[in-house]
Image (cartoon, rainbow, N blue to C red; front, side, top):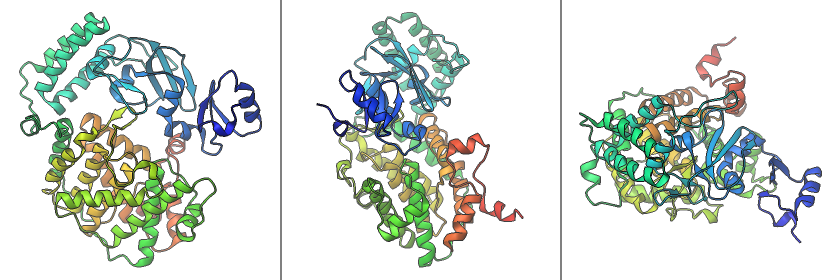
Length: 498
């Protein structure tokens, strides 16, 4: 007989388990997420929990779902929480903070990518063709598909990022995929838009000659992104925010909050005093051993890099450092293969990162550019995005990317960068904008502000620092901050308040 103990953390009901689940819900042993879907997690705010486990939830509800409409082109939910899917069976689902809208459609095509979590990501050709179907917004949700203006903007960005040759290849794919989907008219309309963009265009990505000549171990599209960021950083003139030598007490305090907030970004949340107990007194909360070890591992690496940082002298050293950082950060999660590059493709919010066989080659291309950048801020921002965009490990990529960023800053005697809780959504939005649209300005400006903010913080006294962080709104969850129209305040500004 099935028991609660045998079920995974997120589970669906069956005819034989409904009574048991009903009793468990009444006894407050499980919580309902949606119709027929439950979780054993009783503590995490439901909207946060759904956000963290969103795609696992999707695959629990639907068999072989395919991202659809604007969800496919945006690689994730819209700002209003709408998610659009093509499914073979199932209905719309309302979740805390999100709504999944489904439709029946064509089964996965050979060019569609099946991610490791079971979700299908349609090819660019399919996603664009299906977005050519007109849809309307309602009082409940945004329109399922892009407007003609949005499609044109998407294709213009595609041309800028990948070049005319890539856009012409997409055009050829559109014709073939249109026939497969039985959407010839939509494909023809899309073909006309692409044609209008390519006439007279001389846009050729700088990386094309170096990466499209048979070197299949390099992700050419990512190299184009890296070159764009390299150029923007080379032209950016960062302010000098040098720091005095860090004494032991200040390092302990700043490293604590850097590790604390870095884990918060990844959904690992503790109360501040609880986190202090974990790091400095080995007081691990019951049932959270792995989360606690993540926090400890991150803090250990951060503490070391703040006191003793040097930039890797060559690519081999860079790889060894990257693997070493990951091993320490993920020391408590043997199932995530600490220090070992991924063997399977990974994704976030529907966005697929560099494929496993291209990880080392793509990192090497990026490192060659990194080696030409001067200054801790430029090098740090580039390194962080390089690692984040390649996503070389199964898990923990964001934390090791931020560690590498701050290693570059400390090596140049510059203030490190801490991303507080309230700034999380802006940080992730800037990363997405850079990844999907090549928006260098958003990424650089966001990190420049975070750099200013961190440099103005006082890291001398535990009580004083926590008080300033609270007044700056640093601990606020982004949703709560937005609800009350609050933002991250600069320490210098709040100190002026009487």
